[in-house]
Length: 273
Ligand SMILES: C[S@@+](CC[C@H](N)C(=O)[O-])C[C@H]1O[C@@H](n2cnc3c(N)ncnc32)[C@H](O)[C@@H]1O
Image (cartoon, rainbow, N blue to C red; front, side, top):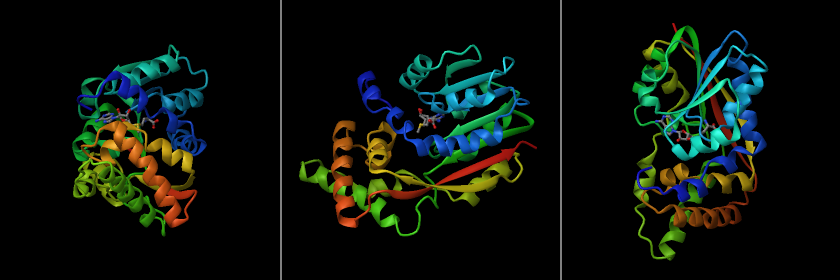
């Protein structure tokens, strides 16, 4: 994130991706399972531009005694969230999962959607989240960047997309260390996530997979998101990375014949014991 200009944060925002209906579906799936009138103090960790915060508010209805705290390290994402959501129930706070227990305590629920894969030390962060929750409180998270996200027969497509993007960059004279892309992100399995939760003082989480169809437009949109570009093409400037991912996607789709691509979302809910 260091060195990114305000303009870049704006242009490479996550917001476009959040408008695809399947994205609402995978988030609503978990929000409906953990948000209920009895749970009043809710943390939307890694809230980004606020798509999940909106779903939480929708689910809470007119629960006036509720409090939702949206937390994100990105000032530009928080600016967007504050502009999109005007509710007395919500506070947006700049902060990070690594030290969330210094920002909030005694919460009934922490939702951490589409962000846990971005955290390098997941054990430490899940421990922090446990400290934030009351006993009996719930921790809900989802991600599509885990070991198990690729539906059978599609892993070649996802690999080829990045390989073709790297090829585009090289054709344009940019030297890319492709080996770096392989180690940039560690995808955990559902079992590994479950173990981390148990170790941090949660019950063994319920784990479910929700399968959705990603449209070409949605794949293009994720390829324009700063954190995705940095993960897929480490060290590549955002503008060049986004253009290469777009052209790489076209090539990968032509070569594999894929149009819509199915993908799994991991959905986990754990109770603090
Ligand atoms: C893909 S977006 C998801 C936003 C939102 N939760 C949603 O699902 O629409 C990931 C968000 O996680 C945030 N993030 C990255 N590292 C984080 C950390 N260590 N703690 C909390 N949030 C983090 C990013 O700034 C970004 O806004």
